[in-house]
Length: 290
Ligand SMILES: O=C(O)CCC(=O)C(=O)O
Ligand SMILES: [Fe+2]
Image (cartoon, rainbow, N blue to C red; front, side, top):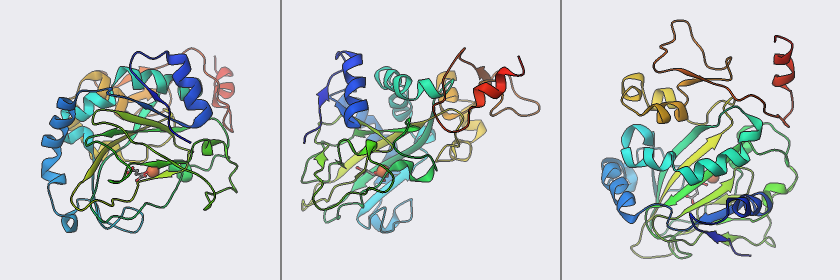
């Protein structure tokens, strides 16, 4: 099984249909190598450290030969640009849009897998949410290649179709996974319910660097606390689009307001009609107030 590759000019309907059917797609060269170089420069203070000084505490899941840093929107302008990528936005609208008025950024992390790293435990990024699987997707991840991704240097491994597996099925030895082999500036987009993990780095001296930006439904708690990761003073310096994306906004009138709301920073995002196929139906309840 191999991942299907598309480009910025591919028919969006086909990309979305593939993502829905297989749980993952690659969009080749969606941003320039120069933009990825800018990210490397901006994140150097964190990713330039030795693995022992990793900004995030290492453990079995995060890997002991891997450096990670989060809070990317406050650390790198170029990451903000990636987060707002228009092609990714269309995919998020297609997958998350039907279940919310507005999707939002949930998790940001640059992941530098070093030589000798073992493969990460296959997992679903949606473990943290108690929704029954399979079901409407509540979390979609993107990992951008800051370096080329190869089988040897730790390209993400993904079990195609596994977003449709029931809760009681987990990957076994006989399940086949695909490698997200891609060039610098390309991105893998995958359903949070698809089993995946970072690959083993079998090289002697090459690092695999990925920039992870995940999105979730606008009414769900974000995985990474964006308000602490990007404090108010920093958030005020971002574009309105980026402020909205990281959660400085009110979702559909009711989620995220506070007394004394700063109208300039907070805007109310509503969409006339959306369907929640998830358990509980907030929109029905809301109808009663109209
Ligand atoms: O680094 C990768 O390729 C995947 C990382 C990942 O899935 C995670 O940390 O949740
Ligand atoms: Fe993951």
